[in-house]
Amino acid sequence: MPRRYTGTSDGVSKAKRPGTEEWVRQVCSLSGGALWNNGTWVVRNMRGKTSLSVHATGRAMDLSWRGKTNGRKSAERVMDILTANSELLGVELILDYWDGHGRGWRCDRASWQAYTKPTLTGAPGGDWMHVEISPRMAESPHRVTAAFAKVSLI
Image (spheres, rainbow, N blue to C red):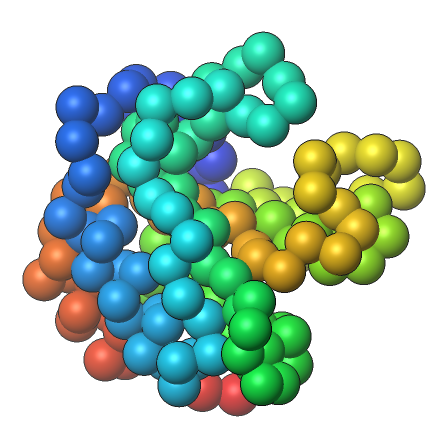
């Protein structure tokens, strides 16, 4: 059964959330250093839009491969791992800015959708992915560490 996408319904956070910060550390380690933290919590609207970014909730992160050898290839592998383990890791959304108009994976459909018109500001050619995690994961670094220890590599 598909999980509900939270979006910004849990409101604006007053600070970084500890589980999110640990999640970033874990996924960067999983990538073997091919990904780095390009930003987490900041209260702002989505780029080019008038609605609030999920970054404001403290549950979103941008992970870049800019400047890394084989970075894009590593990022694709990590996105495959994240979608295959999405329930375990609390992944709700992944946005990939690389090709065409970009693509998005969401927990409520559990599949990728390639965008056929301009949708993501920064696509094509964006050298990062945007990931959103569940409120439950965002609150608990211990839960995040335990989940990453169980990740199935593909």
